[in-house]
Structures are given as C-alpha cells and as structure tokens.
Image: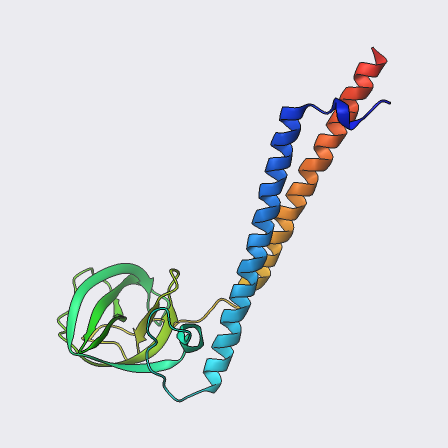
Length: 201
C-alpha cells in the first residue's frame, strides 16, 4: 500500500487540519455577517416606507433592531460629555463628527451625533429637542443622527447600510472555503508524492 492513513505524519497533519478548520470557521462567520447585512438592508427598506417616528429604544430591549433607520425625537434636558470621531458630512466630505451624550430626565442617556465639523472643538450646545435618524453602532447600541444638525454644525451623512456588503461577505466566505479545500488538496498531494518517492528508493 503506497499511501495509507497510518503513514500520515501526525503533527503536520494536525497542523493542516486545524488550519483548514479555522478557514472553514471564517467562511461560516462571513456567511453569518452576510445574513446580518441582509437584515440591515431589509430593515432600512422597511424604515423608508414608514414615516411615523418611534420612541428611541432602550438598550437591550427587543425593539432595538426594529428601530434601526427610523426617525425619532428625544428631549435632552442637558448635554453630557462630548467626543469627536472621524466622519463624513452629507456632501461626503471628510472631517469630524461631533457626538454628545443627551441627558434625559428620568430616562437613559442617548448618544446623539450632533453634526459635522472641520475642527475638533466641541460646539456650544446645552440641550433641547433633537430629531434625527436612529443608527446602529458596531457594539449593538444605537445613536441618534441629528437631522437637522445641532449648534450650527454641518449636516451629518445619514445612516444607510451598504447595499453591496452581503455580496462581499459571500465572496469572502467562498474564498475561505476555497482556501481550506486547497490547503487539504495540496497537503494530500504532497504526502502522495512523498510516499511515491520513498517507495522508489
């Protein structure tokens, strides 16, 4: 028997199998991401058909996902901490997005993307009514993107999911599965060649 499983080297085989398993897991992770992105697109399309505003969802409530991309209005009794992050405005210009903690009497604070600016300085704003679009953060929380913007800031780029992202995730998944299969095939062929070379000696 030129090539049998008993002659497979244990350590290299385990290394290849573990590597292939990781690649397969990454492929399924991309498929999960694809489903998530498709869900975002579906919620965005549904929100576009619903003009009535909704209440800003409480963190961890079952209404969080359904509220994504819907309009909402919150009453900020005061302004908490400000922070700045890189972002783009409604004209797709690069700059800085000003985000403020909206303090609400008797309710949880809401993160509000107040507007866009070319500088890092926090604007002068101490609270009031804010209307805008609810946008999902990467950590699963929600932020209210002010529309119109606050404190003489420029207009925010309103949140929209990327329409081509599910296709990209599917492409990445196929690539990971292909990498795993290729690694296994190359390893098996290398072992077969090794066994033939040994048999010829």
